Image 1: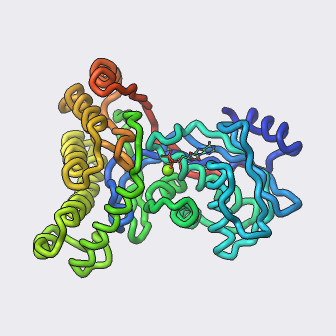
Image 2: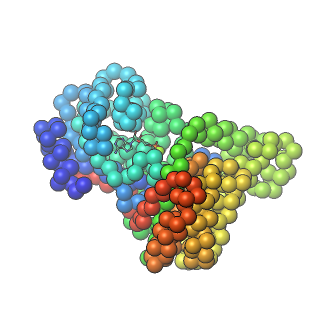
Image 3: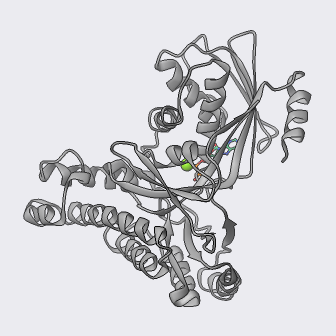
Length: 381
Ligand code: ADP
Ligand code: MG
C-alpha cells in the first residue's frame, strides 16, 4: 500500500492526519542460526517487505491501535495504569513495546496507531520484530525519546522476552532496525557491532516457506537454550562465544549428549558465519555453498531443529541448483523457511523443482518469495 492510501485510511479512522509513518522490514538470515543468544555472530539481511505504522499523538493517555491486517479487531489501553495483557493477540505486541519503554522510565503520551504490513506472518520472516521496531520508532518520534536504532532493537527484544514470553535473541530486531539496501549485516551479538556486507548484484535471494505447521516448539527452544548455557558453564565461560571445539572436547565426559551436540553446533556455526561473510565479499558462491550446506547439516544433526519438510526442500533445491547455488534452512526451525542464494536465471529452475517435487512428497504447498535486501527502520514525516 502506498503512503497516500495509508494516510487516507488513517484519517478515515482517527479523523486527523498522521504526524508520520514508521516503517520497519522483515528479515532473512543468510547464516548464523541460534548463535545470537550465545553472543555469537549472525549474517541476516533486511527485506523489502515491511511493516508501516502511521501515528499521531493524542491529548490523553490512551494508545488506540488498528491494523489493516485485522480489520475487525482494534486495541486500546491506558498509559496511566500498569500495562497488562489484553484480549487482542496482536494488540499485545503494541502493549509489550509500551510496557518496556514505560518500565525504562520513558514518559509516553497517548498515541493513535494504524498498522499496515506486507510481511507474511509466521513465515519465518519475523513480522513480529518488524512490528516491534516500527511501533518503537513511532513512540520514539512522538515522545522525542532520542533512542537510536540499537536501543529500539533492544526494547523490541525485551518486549518479546518480558511481555510476549518468547526468549528470542537480538538478531531479528537489530537487523530490522539497522538493515541497509543491497547489504547483509554481520552482527556481533556480544558487542552489538554491525558491519555491512554488500550482496553481489548477480545474486538473488529466494526464500521458500515449507508451510509445515509448527507446534509445541516453545519448550524445545527453551531446552536448547538451557543446554547451551549448561555447556558454557561446564567449560567455565559466560557464553559459548568464548568456547572452542578443543575446550568442548576437554569436558565432553561431563556433558550430556545434547549439551555436547548443541554446543558443537554453535561453536562451528560461528566459524561458518565468518567464512560465509568472506565468501559473500568475494562473490565466491562455491565457498558460500559449502558453509551453508554445513550449517544445514549441523542444524539437522547437532541442533536437531529441522523437519523432513525443510530437509526435503533443501535437497530439492540443492539437486536443482547443483554448484550454482547455496541452500539451507533459515530462521527458528521446526518448519519455517529455507533460503537459496543463486543467479537470477536459476530462480525458474527452483520454482520448477519445488513444483514438481515438494507437494507430492510432503503434502504441503510451499510459498516462494524472491527478495531484495531492503532498508531498516525509517521515519517519514
Ligand atoms: P513471525 O515473527 O515469524 O512472522 P510471530 O508468531 O513471531 O511470527 O509473529 C507474528 C505475530 O505478529 C502475529 O500473530 C501478530 O500478532 C503480530 N503481527 C505481525 N504483523 C502484524 C500486523 N501487520 N498487524 C498486526 N499484528 C501483526
Ligand atoms: Mg517472530
